[in-house]
Image 1 (spheres, rainbow, N blue to C red):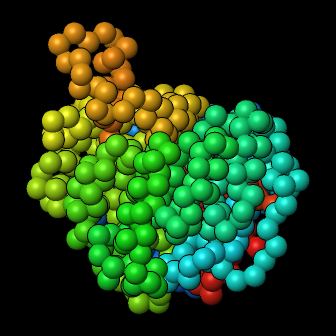
Image 2: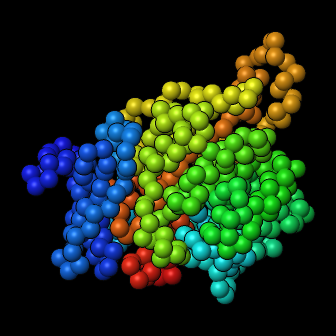
Image 3: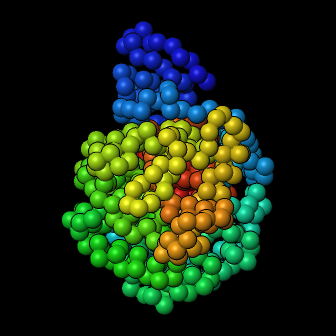
Length: 454
């Protein structure tokens, strides 16, 4: 509900009212999104635990010119009845306002690293879901409107020797785009395994990639990993598997944003783009980071412009067509003759106000088209520069496309239920329900989950 009013006590502008939860007791409480000068805050108050004010948008671009309104679209086959109300009936329920774009299926809770920062708080001993359980997950997605794009996640999925079987099964069920979320360790060390993944039908790898120096990996991941990341890219290139570099951004690697993008462009024959994720305070994270400055999406856009020396500008980014406008940004480019050319001045996968379902479908199609295998190798495109057919032009665009994006996941301090209701990234629960990513991973101040491990 848009209020566009001035609060009398501090002359700050209330952009809209929403609901949230208390970080201590997780009870649902009223909240408001407030603009103070050029910054945006989520403000809320729990009768028991007091007031909370959390920065959610720091600086330009101005949020009021950024935000896109969407016409809500309820998922067709939601399986949960509304009882307690959002966010306690996730599954999805009839209060949800967006269709699914990507489903995360967690195939293991085991991991071959012990990172200081981990959304999933993975590791330790647990029993992996067997192939019949994975089959149940795929069938549950289909019953709820799929096939959607699938990301196999964890834990670290590559600790499973039968991961190729899981991918092949998904393709047999009709899932056209299957992506692997991985730290890259086994991808770097086991080329035969990479070949099996490709032959099974893997389209893309979502590669954890936090910086260009081992110092960063020691701080965030607990060990030196840069050479492993480079070797993982080499193996993906051999088997034409598209890679998205995924840096988790905190203060220690904010300065490395430009170098990461340059590295991605140097490897554009295998890297399709960079997807930044500012650290959120759930799962496992050091207490020192909890007390540090929260990094917001505008700061990442501004850092990209600064650290690339203006090669990419803030104005090249646009709000998402799928999820809530405060959740992410996206810019699409063509890399031609050493130059990065924006596809449009304000790049986005959508335009004007539209039905949410349309945006979800566009987002699914974009990921399938631009984040997977290159259909034509770059050196093949340079043979015919004089006379290009329409098909060759499209092939050139597909083969030299490059995306830069970011998604800011919510935690108990900045949770906005209007954003949750527009979420299109859903995690498959053990019961077969689709849970918005932030709700599935959210924890209270004592690291107790609301949904994970329930």
